[in-house]
Amino acid sequence: MLINRHYQIEKHLDPNKVVVIYGPRRVGKTTLVNEYLKKTKLRYRSDSGENLEVQRILSSQDFDLIKDYVGNNQLVVIDEAQYIPNVGLGLKIIVDHIPGIKVIATGSSSFDLSGQVGEPLVGRKWTLNLYPLAQLELLGAYTISDLKHKLPEFLIFGGYPSVATARTKKAKRELLEELSQAYLLKDLLSLENVKSPQLLVDLLKLLALQIGNEVSFNELSNKLFIDIKTVERYLDLLEKTFVIFSLRGFARNLRRTIRSKNKYFFYDNGIRNAVISQFNNLDSRNDVGQLWENFLAVERLKKQEYKSIHANNYFWRTWEGQEVDWAEERNGVLHGFEFKWGSGKKIKPPKDWAKAYHKTTFEVINRENYLDFLS
Image 1: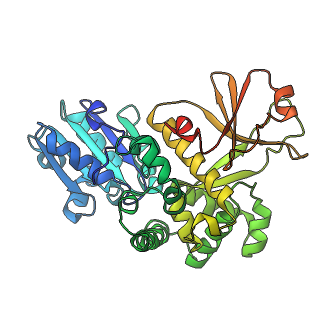
Image 2: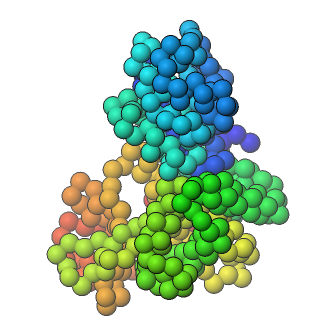
Image 3: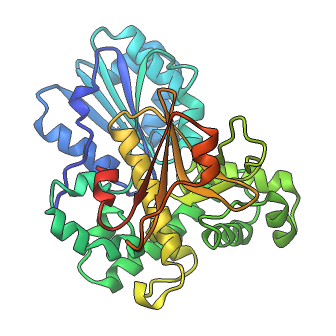
């Protein structure tokens, strides 16, 4: 079953520019590009950055060698471009010296690829972030009723294309276990400054159990028996390799708000559950609220990315315990959202929220209206 992704590559391809597609492994980057190549009329060359000969040519900075590689093609596609040393300089030579050329480069780890292409390709690239399947993408393949019926599956198994389309729970679980290992072993442990595989596993487990709560670096440091700087460095690596993302506390003119700590969410619920080996049904779990909050947070992030909604995202909480799960600052207006798994009674905005910030909205997101929030 092929689910159409939100991005249409042809809309971003410009002469003498590079379309850089970032995203985790097996999220569908190669499929997205191949579907485009099936219908393009451009003459193209497509290679993998894992090819040693391609690495040699594009890292050479030899103008003639690189021009000969491109030949008379109108489009060059490099999959897994992060394996090519100094790939940004090689791509810069292509777009600067071959009139009208178009380039697509994909990379599974933003840590590797963005560090190499950022400066060389300033003003020469479009960046697209591709995530596991979004609810707004799935609405093109399912009815609203069917998608809501499948909600428990997404909370437990997430939205990786191969996982979402697998027919049995056993197959979904096995795919996620393999994916979570690939994250750690291939993307993270291959980096020179990651010394301890077990430390990363332990750190991820701690984060998986603290979704929805502020994370204390001191507490992580004490539990893992490492210094705070190492904790911060590993968290940074986990964010750059699309495993987790952070949410900062919001504070404006209110001293009683918590702003020194972050919340951390996983880019995929299935990966989060694989980290703690927990795939039980919702009715036998005590973390449904955490699953719901993680699901809504990452799906909202996907919507913002895919629909070009420019917002600063935060959580809001006072020392007295008043809280708003998700706060978006857009065009000078603060929008607050409370995530509730149950429909329950009507919830009013916290008193300090309404009192401290005049330009605000507040909405409760539950199982009845969540698709409006995500699509």
